Image 1: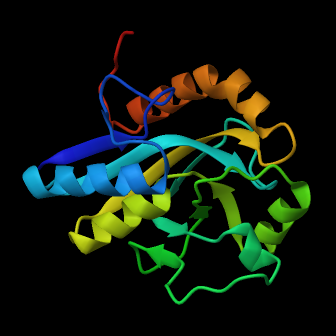
Image 2 (image 1 turned 45 degrees about the vertical axis):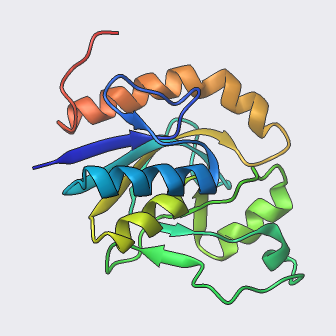
Length: 182
């Protein structure tokens, strides 16, 4: 079985994953290229996520459901004709919101929670969309690095190295990867 473990890039590069870029656009382009030239039987996207408040730092979650909801929609200042919540599974699970912007506002975070959206990761909506287009099963595995409040970036920087270690431990325990020595 051709299983590809993918991640975003920069601080979220792992020796066992293929980095596909940061944000919605680079991710879509690079993952499409990967699927065209070496179509996997299963995609596993790994990385960090910010919590809107219910999930705690270093929690690890799995999901195949993503949304692309911008802050203006929460404020009723915009609309979209696209389906902005997609799932690779029939069952709805933890919804991961994606945007090219990181939320840093507790009030906005609480509005996402009211929509049953618990976390955000910049790339996951693109990953799920491309996987669905190519009929490839997709799973996202995320470790919470920060709350989507005022200090989101500072918390991310402080926690990313430990979060990566915890994610590697989780992937090893679940036998998604073999034990690695870095």
